[in-house]
Length: 118
Image (cartoon, rainbow, N blue to C red):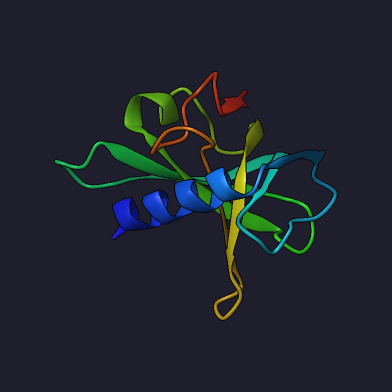
């Protein structure tokens, strides 16, 4: 299901050029590329044999918290409470008031390319 969402996102991005912006708030669409600076709230590695972790981070209003999916080796370089800067596509689930940020080019957020953490 995540793969289908990534394909749909790629089609939308190809059809609508993304705007670059510093995020003062989170857009409620699927085409805005934004840079978010925040704090890592939690890091949840997926159980084996999965190779990813979810990083939960603070963001600007209205997306005061959001998650992103990264590879476990990248997540291991980050610390809860540490600063994080993420550049990607903001998506929302308004019914559940949930936000996530995804990569511009790949399936998973990549340390150094899509985000940095301290």
